[in-house]
Image (cartoon, rainbow, N blue to C red; front, side, top):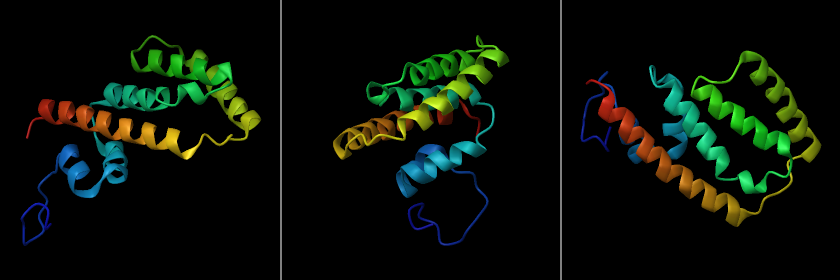
Length: 130
């Protein structure tokens, strides 16, 4: 409440950008689960996040999963493709046993995700009626 300059709690909705500014990336990302009507943007944001570390993906099944996930967000992937790629991606993850990527790579990807989330949230907020 202090961030908002309020002294009493209320039920006034907050924009995702406000949550990002006041509470940080984790809470803003968590709050995206409650946003309705922007599934495409949120799915594309998730793919964008994964693409930031795509260079660390050594298994082509993982990259194929990103491609199908992106097509799904755009409405061009079939349910069968999604099921097949999901299974393959889980197998790839298990096979890789989550190889360590290094702190510097994760920090750079994290910073890029925060910046892009701010842009996506600002777009959603601009198109969402008050």
